[in-house]
Image 1 (tube, rainbow, N blue to C red):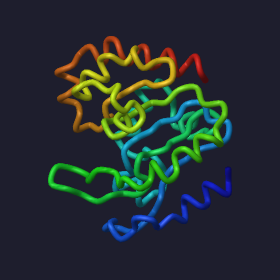
Image 2: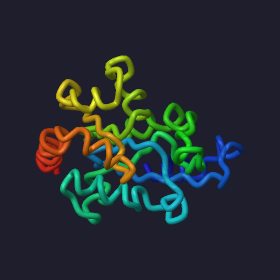
Image 3: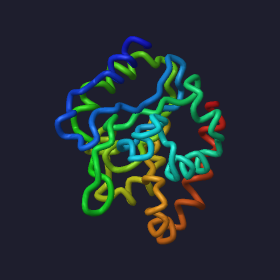
Image 4: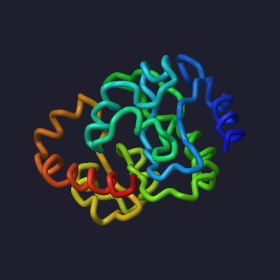
Length: 189
């Protein structure tokens, strides 16, 4: 596993498209049980090299009911974005994750984690990649129907503070989805 992680951290496959250069950020271990597939690192994560080291990470940890120490313990969690490097900013937030990373690295990484029990698919990019044509017409509908994808996949919206409006419009998320998520995570760890 260490050789593969070192190879990923040295990757420069799409560097020419990255305004701040290649700086792959992810975390995984052979014993990881819960695979969190996010979008791509934000600027703060790019600079600190700590996955989910921002408000989105704080929200995600609260959703799951875990603290930082447990979250970064690779015996329990693998933090594997769709794009391993910060893609830069666009007109309405960060650009989408680069499309090279997941096909290049995910399968090989997952083969090294035989104890995986759950994939948290955070955001539309992860859901489209892993659920394919089983996704619903919208992210909201996919998340609302999360039970259809269990026991292996659990779709979630992005935990960005920018999504607070979405959460306010969809109270079922806090009432139905988050308690189930916490229960499943607790059972696994």
